[in-house]
Amino acid sequence: MTEQYSGGYSTQIIDQFKQRTFSKQGAFLQSYLSAGLTVLDCGCGPGSMTLDIAELVNPGQVFGIDSSPIQVEQALLMQKERAIINASFTYGSAYSLPYADEQFDVVFAHAVLYHLQKPEQALAEFFRVLKSGGLVALRDACHSGDMMMPLNTELTAVWDTIEKVFSHQGGNIYFGSQHKQLLLKQGFQNIKVSCSYDTFASDIEKDSIRSYWHQFLNADHRQLILAEQWLTETELDQQCKALDQWCANPASFFARARCEAIASK
Image 1: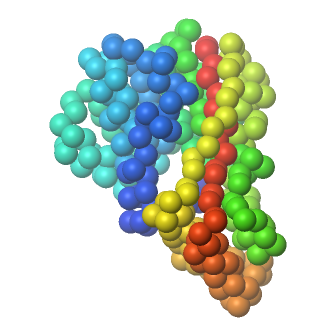
Image 2: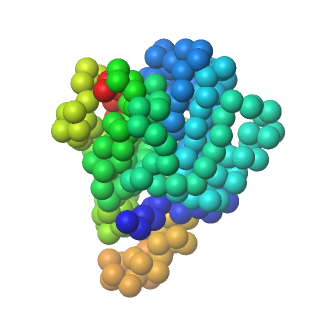
């Protein structure tokens, strides 16, 4: 099955991923980790959170896997810089994990499943590679909880375009709300759900998210948006301008809703 990450792999986007920390994005799981555990970080990106986990579970082993060779290359470079030896990285698919049955104590997937065409297939693989009693930990976006303030009709139109791109590629910007339902279907138990926000309020933070969606709309998916006739060139340029105006507003901020779930096998 061919998958394509909706956000793309520009240098700008990868640099943003490198800023992720497990203490922030993985806070809902952190209290469950201890020394000696074997952990899989599926969709590890450039490895910043994977390496944080490795420090927490040392001398346990952490395995990072990503569908992008570019991301894996960046993770290996970061591992060398941080001199962490109890982590390894490989290229592969969440649909066919290259690991043995019941190999892991914990499987962690941050902002992965909502991009996938078949998230239930990835969850089945998570179940397979987990030890009996092991934990799966998921964190995904759910747009119904997002706050992009002050909201206006132009920003609503921007999100309509974003949703069309995600849906076209098999993703779902509302996916986080489905965690509990899908985990139950895969046979997971003791499901605990929570929600948190990634907030962008300072000038630097707002510009980073403005730049991210600019890249998404005007570079990575401009050809698709125009080919599908979702927008004209003028309308697409207007949506990018709306993001610029939002960013320049001193009163603006963006809070991205994340649904979280922890369950046991």
